[in-house]
Amino acid sequence: MKSPLQAIRESWRDFFSWKMVLLNIAPVLIGLLFWGGLLFYFGGNIVRILEGFLPTSWYHYAHSGGFLPAMFLLVFKAFVYVLVVLVVLILSLIGNVLFSLFYTPIVLRFLQQKYYPQVALESFGDLYFCLQYFLKQLAFLGLFLLVCIPLYFIPFIGIFFSLIPHYFFFKNTMSFDIASSLFNQQDYQRIQKDYKIANHKIAIVAYLFSLIPVFNFFATLLQTIILSHHFLEIKQKS
Image (tube, rainbow, N blue to C red):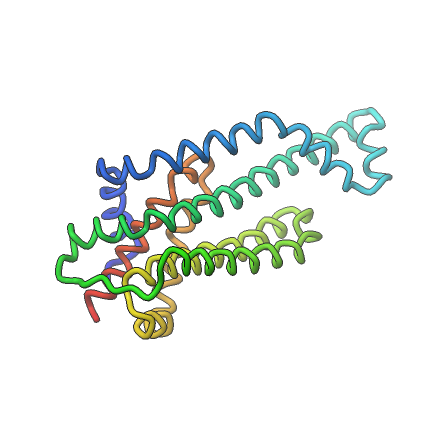
């Protein structure tokens, strides 16, 4: 098995091949236009709405005038903007993962023909099956995020608690989408058990690209390539 760094280097070259660049254009443009427009037109309103969640005494203090209240309001607004950016990162990944369901078979065929011609592509799920799995994981993610809402307003801890379910949504959905187009169901279940740690290692490395602002709009295709290389290597060994 290649190390995560080796997988990234190889995947990076594939990511910039002309076929993959063309494949990435539509999701990137749609994501940038949608989220850029949303933040541009509604960013200020979102901050004012979140200010309303402050305790009444805090709200009055922040608007009472003076140096310390002004600093308090500045720190609060900075924290809110960080929280808004984090929410956009999470939602953009959800949208990008949804897009990836449609182009994953194309990526797999491209890599299989280029690097793994001896590997046969099996399948136990179609697009409808993958969409069902996506919606199921999205429901789990939404439920967990709702339960943890009070924690989001605790600096650092809130960010940590929002990223954990986000990572598992990414890992479970992307892995299932790729592996269901590559393995039969029995082999998929075996690989989930036998390669559990290796699957998490490569998924964590791939997930980190989602946390880079702006690049996260481009990153899902790169993440698909990284995870596809990983599962194709496992398939080649078995």
